[in-house]
Image 1 (cartoon, rainbow, N blue to C red):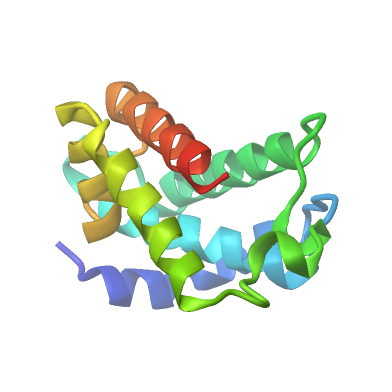
Image 2: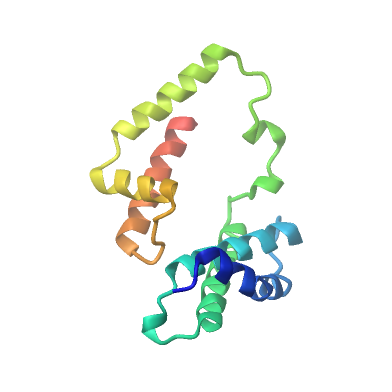
Length: 153
């Protein structure tokens, strides 16, 4: 089996080529290119040659699906990309230590509300073993994100 970095380096032109054909509102061309390269990295890790699908075809499918997902999120009513939000939305501008501790405490409390499946999904996401094609894990990660966002609000 080919190592992930070697496979990624060899086929990164595929991702860049696909990214150049996409426009996602609120995202720069560099953002779209980065999403495509991340999708290529995921494809390299998920690729199983024994299934008989050529890697370039598999990579194109994974990249197209990720960019389509980004487009769907970007055009969803009421959703904004980070590039569209104001600095106050995402940056701690005037935060003292007590506010930071309270925010951290809220996140710790949110982790205590996670189910075992949600914790597993978050752990896999953090350590890079998350499989976005496992619908059960995908749903669990979505629920965990929702809980974290509620705690951060």
